[in-house]
Image 1: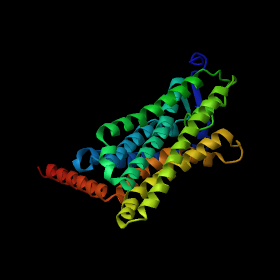
Image 2: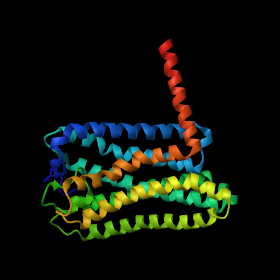
Image 3: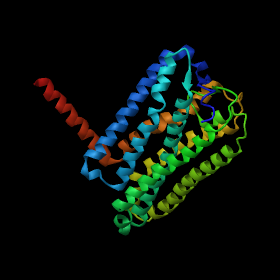
Image 4: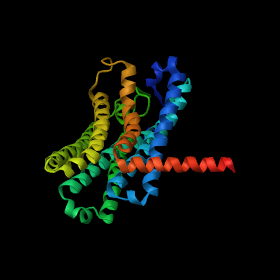
Length: 316
């Protein structure tokens, strides 16, 4: 990293509008992060501990929740600390680590959602070959790729950004974001632009794949009552999760690259910048937990057993 010796810290200017509400925002942040931990860990434990849920769709859902914990861990603890601090800075290395984790989390989310769409397509459109197509070996390979490819993409992005000569240290956000670092560079950013657009196009391809899968799914589901039931139970929550993460990321990415600094207030920019770290990790497990009957029953049973265990220990 060429700039490591000259730049030790970055300042985060997005906190300039939070000074008057720091205690309120800190309390909400703790509440939100606590809820994210509870709902995601509950769903992960439910799927791991219940043999009846060791099916492809639930395994993909488990990975979606693990990814939610992975991504939010890079944001919430630092964000909560900064809310109570008078100085909002992050180290050079810490900044690049935050970029790596947060944006690999976002791309892994799209990869897993694409796998879930493929799983639903095979289950509804090709039910007779479902178990042979979605074998244990293939599932393991697909899950490995859904993590490895995004991580490799982010390694390339971080490597290119770390080689830039930077002429500033102010990042106009609440956290470190790759394009915000690129914008303060005074060396050529052509390679960063090209690679960034390739990666964005690649993951837009994921969204297109999911949409095309659902066109086929809708056509197939309308043909039978059982198909409609399967579609409503397992595909509707998936579509809600996709819409959730796509809308949040699309605004953040497009505004970071092409938005005018004065066109939107700092408070609005702050909210939109953290939306994909707030809504998907919190809502994804809740959406699936409420709509999927199997998950709902198992989570309820898990909490009842936990409650009974606590009562027995208190009696003793």
